[in-house]
Length: 222
Image (cartoon, rainbow, N blue to C red):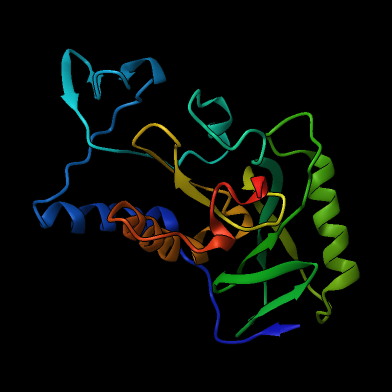
């Protein structure tokens, strides 16, 4: 399948610009600080950053699979880590004006440079990239993606990570039943596509609006 009018988002390049735009408003402050759960005091409504104790009105946890370690996460085991691996390839003399999809995808990043992904591994022994994962991707490329004979195909980078998926593959948003803690999670393989809309929904929820039932954190308890 040829997916037209599509592309890829350079997230590492985008995020610093978004941070700068928020800072320019004068309404946001970015702190690069690893905040342990023990620094949060729900009884006092405060958190400790270094030697400073700050009050909070609400905390939003957007932690991906890290939320499974969160002592206040009300979703039980709803987050299901799904490992994925992808390859960055250099393919000479190939130009694709579209993304090719057939179980996996081949997307052009720059002239002669492509992303090939991704594996779906619900069971894994390491989060790191593996030779088996690279072999699977290259074999699937040869078996599923129809390309002309390629003079050269050179792997440039091998990446892996964990996707925070949910049982029905929909996001998980909501508030803790007893604390002003909010959660945004479960975006799975569609984080770039769904994050802006989910953020809008959660922002409205903080102001009192109801969440759509399809993404409500507590939908599995019904």
